[in-house]
Amino acid sequence: MADYMVRAIDAAGNIRIFVATTTELINEARRRHDTWPTVTAALGRALTGTALLSATLKDKGESITLRIAGDGPVGGITCDADEQGQVRGFVREPHVDLDPKNGKFDVAGVVGEGYIHVTRQLALEGTYTGTAEIVSGEIGEDLAYYLTKSEQTPSAVSLGVRIAPDGTVTASGGILLQLLPSASEEEREQLELNLQALGAVSQAVETGLTPEAILGQVMAGIPYKLLEKRDVHFACRCSRERALSSLASLNPADLEEMIVEDGGAELSCQFCAEKYQFTADELRELKETRH
Ligand SMILES: [Zn+2]
Image (cartoon, rainbow, N blue to C red; front, side, top):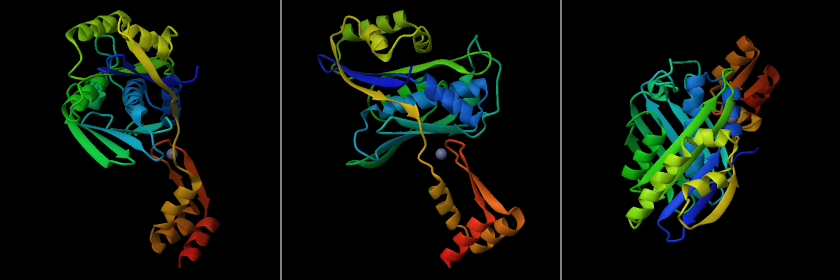
């Protein structure tokens, strides 16, 4: 089943809710970056959170970037998503692993302490970056804290990734809930009960629940309206042309060294690990057209 997300609002306009399934997206990220399981869980949560945050982007070229700058062994996580549901991301060190903690992946252990930064590039409002401390390293809680403190939007975020013994992702998904101050105590209590009844979002996805079905469970007893359904998938904006133009910015001596000593160049995209190869002839041509 292809990944997608849904966006809804309660009838009274006090609760905004976003639900995403991201199993394919996270598997593609894992395959491209060859992440080990604890890192797959960490990157998967970060990518899912980024996808959820991108659900309100509308205009062409809008994007959101999440950077988790912790001092743990994963060495930082960077994800971004655009208005078309194209999501990509990477970690600095994909090959680290820690023993499970309380039967769960020790995501907090690989992330460490530090800060999360969220940058929104919006068509009308321009670019804005907000920062908050990493409070637990579990990523969902950190995003919720960031949204509540830095963007003054009281939020709850639930992110989960299930991984098979062979390292592949069997289920991944997330829920983002935003409560306006006008939300009643009854609504809050109802949501809390519903979330408890639902259990882990990754388990809900694993049992085959669609985003709409998860939405229905979280909002049980609260009238709501489905606003939008949007595809999400792993996709990168890199290309051979862009890689070549980044080589064009090198100084001639470095280009000459690549031609003579390496007989060409290979560039790897940080975000998606795609490799682009250039022959010595291509580099020579690049050097000549520039001068
Ligand atoms: Zn790329």
